[in-house]
Image (cartoon, rainbow, N blue to C red; front, side):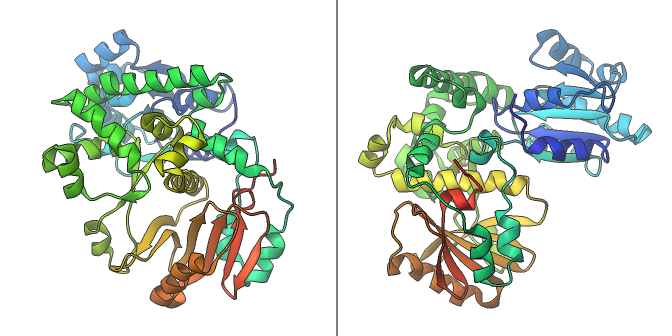
Amino acid sequence: MKRRYLQTIVEESLKHFPAVLLTGARQVGKSTLAQALINKKTWNAGYITFDDRAALDAAIRDPDGFIKAMPTPVIIDEVQRAPDVLLPIKRAIDRNRKSGQYLLTGSANILTLSSVSETLAGRVAVHNLYPFSWPEMLDLPVPTILKDLFDAREVKDLIKKLFVPVKSDYRKKIEKRILIGGYPPAVLMDSDHARREWFSSYRQTYLERDLLNIRAIENLPDFNRLLGLAAFRTGRLLNLSDFSRETGLPFTTLRRYMNLLEVTYQVSLLRPYFANIGKRLVKMPKLYFSDTGMACHLTGADSISSLDAQGNMGAMAETWVAAELLKLLTVSGHGFQLYFWRTQAGQEVDFLIERGREIVAVEVKWGQRIEERDIANLKRCSQDLKSRLRLSVILYGGTEVIPLGPAMLAVPFPVFFGVRE
């Protein structure tokens, strides 16, 4: 088993909270991580999964009796399949506030589901496990780039810290990462054919079991078609009205289906940045598939030439960066938020990383050369955000860290993500 970055964070939470909830898409390794935490000396927990039909039936039939009879500490896997156990867990915690009693895992964000009446507020630490990140897959330390970006006093100090040799062929390795994604079973397969079979099986199981366990779907073929169309739209603004006309689905149905994709961690919706927080909630978000391997499978792209032919290479590279950033934010401490920036005229910066009152802008460029037009939007963003913008970064396909101004620099992908292959 590869040790996940999140393991240390979950171990720390178990020392301070009565319950920990580990969520994420199915097959990202939640069960493996949860069981890796069991230690006879430090946390000697039992394990039960609601994939076991007998256990699931018992929890559904009598959730109170099930929890009362369950010795702690205990791992309860796939808890979203019997969400009624959360209320008796709350009662058990209120009787005894001892830390590390329950580790719950779920492949849906059960705290957002309408069927869940009790959120365990103040009693549970919530952590989201993503597919493997690029450096995590290579057993490298957690990248420190976010801390470096916000702590550096001057660009020259940052460049000095980031000045490391980069191999010129690394783009081929990223292309492979984009095509296979980060799901552990897919990543660890040597056969492309076996990997395609795995993605196909994942899609079928997701549609026929996971979704229907959460909420009834009136028309599964429509949802299946939407899944594929959403993959083609990754990295783009999500205009539900236009999407409704394109798919032929009623607006309310489409909005509900998109919410299900988000709740089950298949997609992420990135909000635009506005100083007025209310505006962030009403403006159109950008849609990103959570895993580029799955997105490539759904669009039928089995090679980089296929992505180029579809005109999707840029959007897929941006989607890969979005996923890597989200994975990095979850293991880099609290206080980081991710947005994008866009003007009414359509000028856009791919990502804004916010910490407190400070912001770092990140523009993604798959190419190897930096041109004036590549930095024009960053300059416009700087004028808009003024003193709140600490630094601007062009994340690009070259090999050198290049200063582009007093508060702007270009950084190769491997340097940014701490990869030395």
